[in-house]
Length: 112
Ligand code: HEC
Image (cartoon, rainbow, N blue to C red; front, side, top):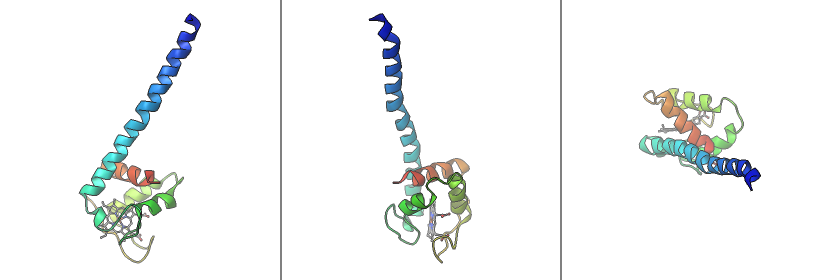
């Protein structure tokens, strides 16, 4: 039986990794969602339908697999954006910190 103990330990480690890791990334994306709910975002955006701005689902789809997606979206949110999705502009949000912008863009990009 002793020769199985290392395998058993490995198995336990991988099981706990599977349980723990998604939870921590889930917590991060939930923080992003909370920031969006707290801000003015949902006055113009919804997750799955276009309102004034594009649906966050469509944003996630457009930028899927793009390496600099977080940075591009963070710049659009912080500085405002126009002409990418239509003629209506998004106002700038200069008071969001880089850390908050990262949480918000992580959440938007996680939407399937
Ligand atoms: C007054 C309405 C309005 C508000 C408030 C608003 N948005 Fe937007 N948002 C827009 C519009 C309109 C666009 C499309 C801009 C364009 O075509 O370039 C947009 C685009 C975006 C995009 C896509 C940018 C890109 O580069 O493709 C993201 C992400 C986004 N908004 C997130 C947010 C978040 C997060 C907030 C809150 C902090 C927010 N928006 C608040 C109207 C708004």
